[in-house]
Image (cartoon, rainbow, N blue to C red; front, side):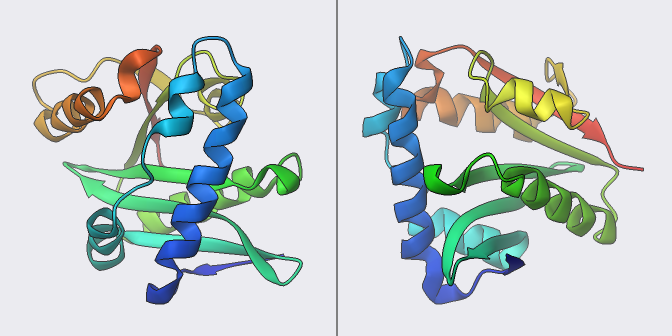
Length: 169
């Protein structure tokens, strides 16, 4: 297993992983809508590549997961993360988050944020085990509030969402 920066031509692979991973939500009551949500757009991938970072994990000779990090106000933000179902449970998600946090520290960020589903075991509870805490973005975080508004518009907020953060030491 190798975690490395994503290549520009790997956007479609990352989008396919995101859509494949979304299928796991279909089995959860109230989360079936996630299966029909679109993957992050080419423009969103370009923004992450140009202003943040995209990392992929090579497993068994193929890309098996990824994480995208973007600047969001004074924080670095996990914009998207996905690991193919066949590779879940191997610690890959945790390693991707660790690489993203290291990147953020190297860029001078003191905080990592994200938004995720509150009640999905591999979402908010996963991040809580990694030291992330739920919080309500206040008026000092207009970019985060704008991102949450965008998620509502795109259909992510059908199920309970939560903003989370971790202070990077």
